[in-house]
Length: 232
Image (cartoon, rainbow, N blue to C red; front, side, top):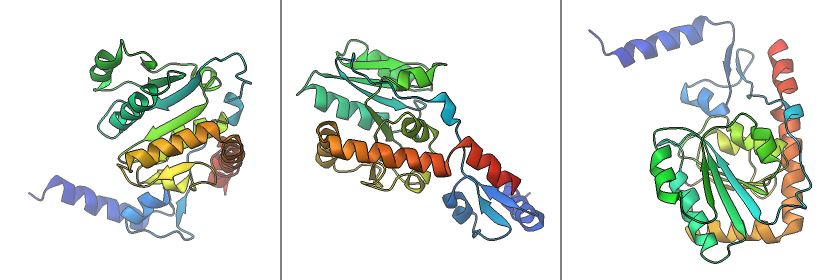
């Protein structure tokens, strides 16, 4: 019998051929399937409800809060997150790095950092928008990505973003315009660290990224925009 992956690919090609419309949530996924955008093949990005998210003034928050949201899995690069956290905290204790998510590696990192000052690890929570309102910087480190919902939620919460990795992330972030972006899975660590510290200290840069990021998510990744495109 033919291998299952051959049958799956053959069926997939047939469905692409006979469908009236093919919809992907990234340009990347269309390209992987050798499809180009036209009247039949469309990209409609995942949309988020902007009304859920809000920005607090953070005046009563003593430390700089940094967050990464994502499954503790092989796809997410939590090792880079914790390496950066350790490097920053070794020089300045005025930070709290928080990682949120479930997954097979949760216990591994939780056990390692449970007593580490300045590092918090939490399983998934229901009121993510309330926590995000208290954050100052969002980090998203990944080996592969579709539409990165956590980045969209950071942007909607008016949190500046630093992200790494290929895939759909580069369809959201334009480097130094609406976020800091490294396409490499393992960017130069010192450059990453300096970029982080620059974002912390440079209020003009931070405000520019926040403003442009919110415009990005409002114009391209909101729930209303997604519904409008499906109706078309």
